[in-house]
Image (tube, rainbow, N blue to C red; front, side, top):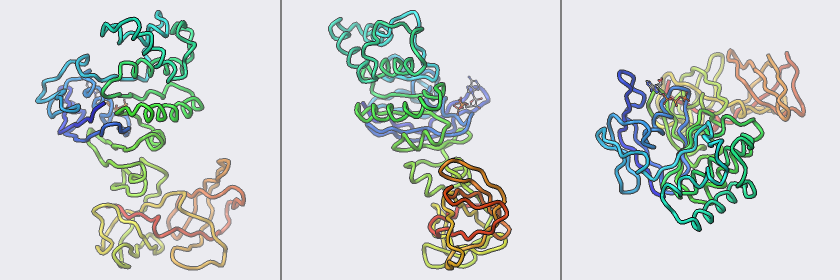
Length: 360
Ligand SMILES: Nc1ncnc2c1ncn2[C@@H]1O[C@H](COP(=O)(O)OP(=O)(O)OP(=O)(O)O)[C@@H](O)[C@H]1O
């Protein structure tokens, strides 16, 4: 296992620049996700690290070794990196045992070692007892486990995942997310994971690198990105955010300010990096659906408002509704136990700390 260091990486396909000068590290044993919308360059970055795509500029280091520099790339089979694909890529004409043993046979390991290592890898992924089955005799989830066993059996220095769970049905995908992280933690395997699914990245990652148009927009722990989005893009991509055009009118100390929204004033207590609670002017206020709570009709204080219920949808434990506050419509999620009715005026509160001010 080793630390991955990517510096100023550029990948161009002719005139199309897929990755624009990005830098990041994945520490030894860390699980990091590249997250972003379709076409943002995450798969290209991953494939370039694997050596399946050439770099056009920048450096990729794994531990002390240089994998790519100045457009010169080490071949994929010399990198000590394994990759798990969305398509499983399990060979149907080979048994599970042979699928997993393949990388060890290429390395000319002894039969005894192959037997032992394949046995251990199949046990790790919960497939002991399946060694003799063929690829065609396995479910999608089982095939994905074979792909995982094949990836870990050679103890690579780095594991790469390209949307490995997106072909599985919702229930199995949920289970495999937890299993995969549990496996990664147990093996202490340095891992880089590509996904466009924000909840998957939030659930699984030590750190998330959020990409857009070939660039890194923000990186940090899932909590950092959720609580301190640095841009409208980050606020909208991660979690349920209402984004409202606003203007800081008066500072209320170093860490909070009064902010005017269409039809009202709200106290904001959270300022994203680069935003100063003392500076006035146009900004965006980010209010997450789950930070709006219903209170008693007679409650007063900072950020207590009357709101008219305009739409309502049942989500099981919660109802999702649009609320008209002043002239602003906000999406809120409220407990379903005592649901409001469309047309009701209800009293709500928004914690000042849950109002995040981001650059316009
Ligand atoms: N072989 C190629 N030739 C030309 N352009 C390419 C090639 N592969 C990718 N691109 C372009 O590079 C950009 C980044 O693509 P990439 O596949 O890395 O995005 P992505 O974020 O992984 O998207 P997705 O989630 O849809 O796979 C896109 O604009 C894509 O059209």
